[in-house]
Structure formats: C-alpha cells, structure tokens
Image 1 (cartoon, rainbow, N blue to C red):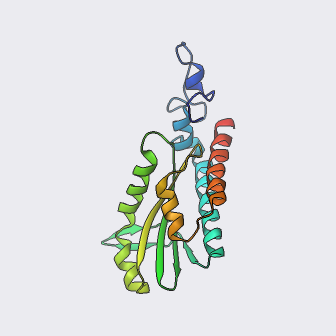
Image 2 (cartoon, helix red, strand yellow):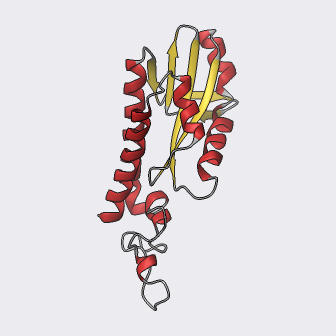
Image 3 (spheres, helix red, strand yellow):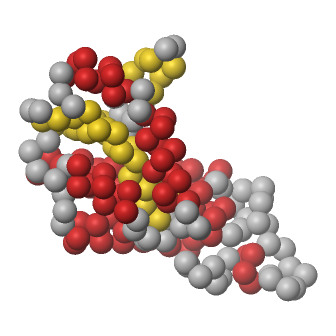
Length: 183
C-alpha cells in the first residue's frame, strides 16, 4: 500500500482506458488516498479506525495512571474546540488529538503541527482549570502504518514509551485501512 501499487481502480487502469472511478461514492478516482481519507461512503469505517486508535491510547494512558476525558467540549472566543482526549493527573495535563493520514512526504509531521496549532488555545483555559502545566500534542499515525517522531512525543508526554504499543497502533491503522480497501 505504501508504494501505491495496491490494486485500486486507479492502479489497475493506469495507462489503460479503464474506469478508475471509486465504485463506492462515484466522486473521484479510487486511490488509496481517496479510500483512506475522503471517500464519503467510507466515513463510518474511517471514524471507527480513528476511534479505535483513540480507545487504545486512552486505555493505555489510564493504565499509566492518567484520568481521561473523551471529546470534551470547550468554547474559546466563540469557537467550539473538541479535542479527542484530555489526560490529567496531579501536576500535568496533556491534550492529544489523533489524526490518521496517508503517509506522503511530510504529511504526518504537518498533521501534528496542524493539531497543535488548533488546540493550543486550550492551554490557558486548562491551566486556569487545573492549575497544572498543559501540553498539547497531535498524534498522527500513517493510514498504512507509518510512525513518526511527533506521535512518539505525544505518547512520551503520557509516559508511554513501549515500542510494542507503537507497533499496535501502527498495525491497527494499517489493518483498518486495508479492510476499507478490501471491502
């Protein structure tokens, strides 16, 4: 899948006069990028993949002594912000927002920065609420299982340094993406 030779309609018709249109939504070419990120017909499986990753991270963090709030809602300057997970324990608060993106170029690093910029306004609000230092992290995972440094930093902030857990998250993303392509 990472080398873009998985048999999607786009790869099967490359150089031929075949129809590369996505059979699910009929709105674009069936590519790995389309299926794993934008196909309207696969919104449910994409959300399930995202939530599965969030659930795994939340459970592991709770095992490491954190309290977790799932999708808490905050209003800042008239805008609603809903991060995936807010972890707290005495002396520290960590905001984590998961994103799963196709690993093209710097997409995963850019996704982490995007999430950090989006949720950074929560720092001041949570500092006032908890009176503990606040960290904000994006946790990007490759749709085809790639891992990147920002994902490690997000888990490190929670004291989760187990490489087998990182592999579990990567494999989960990969398997869910594969199932979307296959079905």
